[in-house]
Length: 142
Image (cartoon, rainbow, N blue to C red; front, side, top):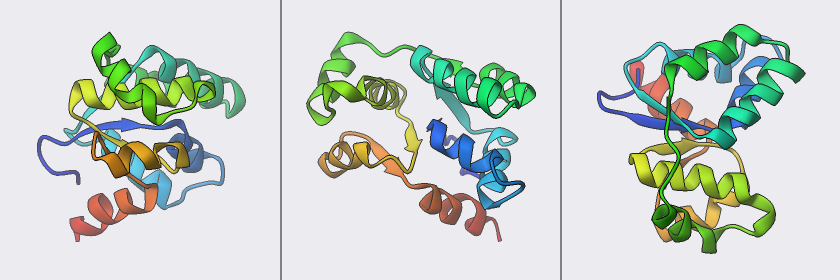
């Protein structure tokens, strides 16, 4: 289980990994986080990604409803967007918004997206790969 007080933004690539190939460790991770008392955060951009991939492409409408109802939708302030802007190319606007959401909420993003490497190296937000999240959340449960 995640530690008490854990706060996360779950990038879309975790959701896709969790449902596209049957039940996997990614599925274990997603369900453990969703069923825990960890705080989850989304923004409008991430909800659109979830809707597109979870609901339309993967056809798992109930998972979309669960996540969208479980997570707090916060949209980051202009100040936090500006703080994150130098770390992302213009073509990665949504990733910049996800990073700013983490900054706003004091949350860790779980993602395998390489676009978060620079902001992670700068120490502005905490970034966990899916495998690191598995180690921190699933393996520490034993």
